[in-house]
Image (cartoon, rainbow, N blue to C red; front, side, top):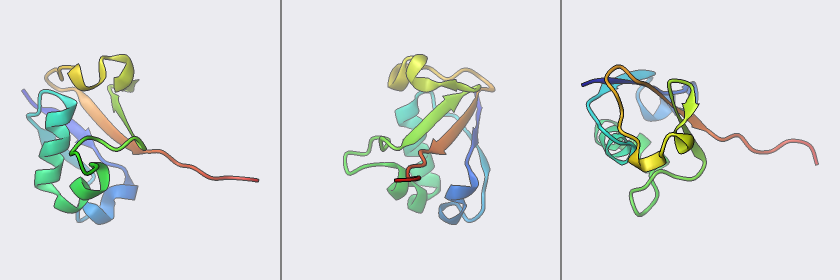
Length: 93
């Protein structure tokens, strides 16, 4: 089983410019660990001190928010497309 992970341009400095990777991870926690192993700088950016995904990172599976699919317990399916999107904050006062 393989999933495709899409990484936004905002993460490019942590992935040596890589925008897409394949993974065999079955769940989100396993995928976060896999990305951290492949890209240690990215791992430090997306994982907190407990090794879990930071709150400001949103994850979508086939354009669906993973929180509505079961979150950490969701089992990836072969050929799922997973996107990591950092939250954007700020704006007018």
